[in-house]
Image (cartoon, rainbow over all chains, first blue to last red; front, top):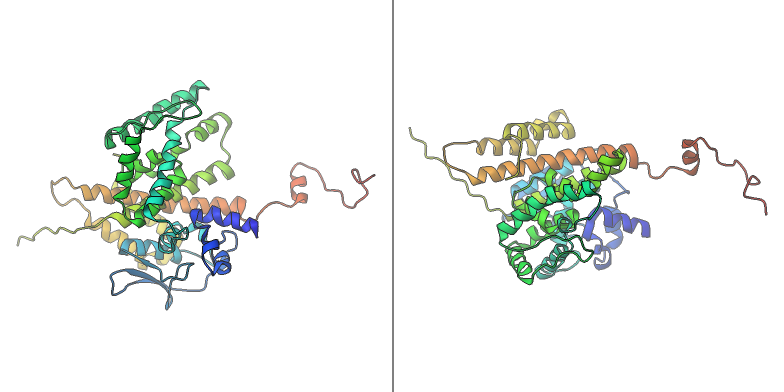
Length: 282
Length: 110
């Protein structure tokens, strides 16, 4: 029982406390445990738009619901299609650990940890104090240079982009982040809606870095670059000692998938698209 | 701006991934139609600098990364991690040893 809880945490990130909050915890546990795959119980997946403008996902004739029992609804068509594709591409069994967008939507809909925006922003900003790109090593020289050459440009970019000071340090306490910097980021994060913030926090917790996360969200980096920078020390060790497919590659692809899902989730839930058509001249 | 591969390649990459996960009937899927429509819509139509196009390009690249990584991760998962842990017998066999077949061997004496 305990072990499956731990696995659940691994698979769903912060959806874990669902089991304590939600009265149907037994069902949730069965539904979302990564190892216990469920048999596929549907054939066709489709989406439909409800009267309130939200999109729903239908499995055969039934409507998809969240683990908490709410109706599964998403704000736009693109996200609905991406989620539907995740369900559609499952073969004989449902592998929930490959359905990152569905998981994120569930988290946003159910809000299992019952947090508000301020709490989420504070949790996200906690990562700034221990940001991956701010912690440097003193030795070995190769890694010192690598960190300087790879991380400094991103750090400079974000300092310029948000007009803040962050700095880096090789002491165990990390750099002293000024209060003004935190306020700037707090204000910036406040401009995101609840859904995007869910995605953003997910990316930050995956990459262990606010700087890199904002780098992809602001489209300064692509996912592969951000993941590489987040795993810089590991990549250095791989270069020295060799690559182990079942650990290194496995982790890397998982991190990439999660970071990409989070990024896409933020972009899809925060954008308001407008279509401008050229006037036909004929 | 992040360096991204050209849109056409990203588009083809996504379609390739969709075919890999959805099989031969992928052209009837929702995702196929949506992706094609988006790529057609965001073609350059004039000399205007278009921010939305860059955004769409980045998003499509992110989606491609999601599909590719999920698939690769699943392949590795099935290969190495899907069967759970190896049994003691198997582990011993890996290094050319055998588990004692019955109590009474070394380590059992009082």
